[in-house]
Length: 457
Image (cartoon, rainbow, N blue to C red; front, side):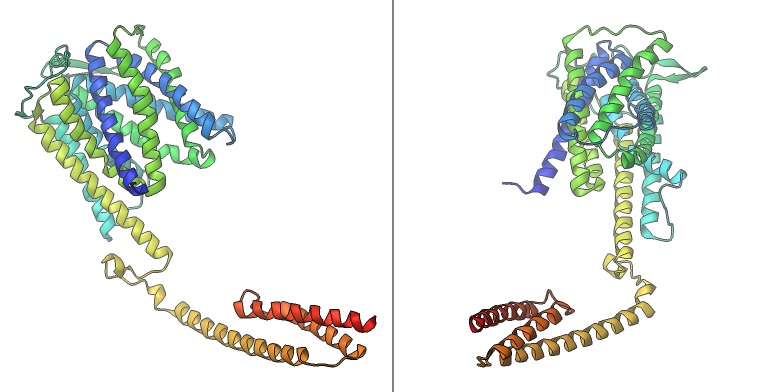
């Protein structure tokens, strides 16, 4: 049987494998003509039903959110689900699954940059953890820039295919075709793959902001499954409104592959993967969950070459590698910061972290005062032990007294009871020696009471 940690690593690997399948099926659905708005709408309808059922089973005893929390969840659903998924699918439509997966690794970098700009993330450039975080962020941004502006020659050309849709997924949109991007009243002429890189960057920024803004609402409403269900339901409400705004009304599902991709995205991509990652965060922390994310890029590259017949280009290799190195540098810096914070909280010497820094609080007056307190408590325990020995001798002397008169027995009973009251007021009632003494005293008092009753009779 595997240990819990072994199962966690297996499940995290399974989650990345499952999400790589989502990338492939989504690319096939988009190639057959599915619009990103329709895909997002049906995906979140399925996800809200699945997550709602899980929340009703696991979080039924939690309190319901108030109106202000629901409005906040509605806004978070627009940013983290609607904008994120629509932009990601649009970027996937204009690029490739390998490209989109490589760009997705920059989400933690954008999250850190946004948090640092809002001063929600502390960065100390004098410490190693702060330097690592800055270095990782710069590498991640440089990798994203390389992915956005450089394609390069084909390094590995795919000649293997076991899918009937392979080789046709990009036929309707040529990567080098020049398109006009119209957004919020502005129009810019760009290459198709550059438009896709722009939408993928927007998706990463939107999801980074979503991760930051969800922390306050989870403090007030600590129900993660219900939180996910509400945000997916919000997106299912928002996407038809967004389609009406852009005067788009084609919501039909025209093929079985579209239906399977939507069902897979809702059940596996939104429910299963999110549950595994949440379990990983609760058991081992967010660092190990983020560390497995680049594995999804490797799986996606392999699946894309087999099922979609996509070629691996130099720009994707260089940019993706730089993003992954930056991601691990950022993760390393955050783990070092956590260790330093724990050391400071427990006032432990930081030399155990290899930083050759000893907190000054351990070298000043509080340490000497703590030592004096220990000496004082040691003297008190010695005095308590002496009193316990004295009580034991007194108990033995009284127990061995063979006086049979009624008066002496009553006096002995009274003495034992006063001794019991004095013992109960002792400073160490939990000490093993004193508990044994208490049992002996209680038994002796019972014997004296019995003898007193016999003499009275």
